[in-house]
Image (tube, rainbow, N blue to C red):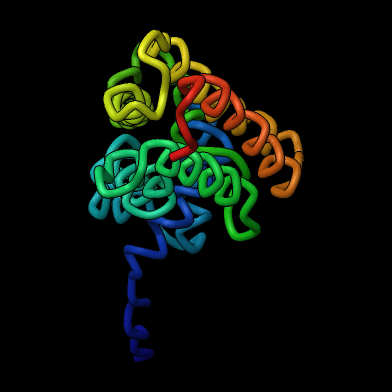
Length: 209
């Protein structure tokens, strides 16, 4: 009697990475279970898939968590009080633009793209970590601008909400531009231009941080 071969080892991290790329490229709703199973090696059965991840939603949550722990860390500097606030914002924008044009994964930002192409109402809850991440980035930008005012690096009458919103809107727009094929050098040059808005808001007699 022929003996069965040893079951192929299951690399969970690699599987979640492949799923992350699919969700990043297509969004939650447009990514099918068949695509996910194929990305896991093509031979995984539906029962094995559900045993490993529980559901498509469960796999998505793992994929988002992996993204936030890796690629999503490009904006973590916004919360580093040891950095000058201008430097924190500029670093976050440049790192994010470079990451979104990286060659080893889909272009754009999984968070921004996932929020803009939100799942259907029936699946809205799965996108909550993306919304939470967006809110954290927005709060980080606002905190940096407020630190700039408090430290005298920005004029006292600076509209902190408006200036933070400009940087936030730019960061969101980078995802669309990267997905459209704009290269990293052009996006980096755009960061240089948008940071001039910070410099324009400095006190008349102040100096750059």
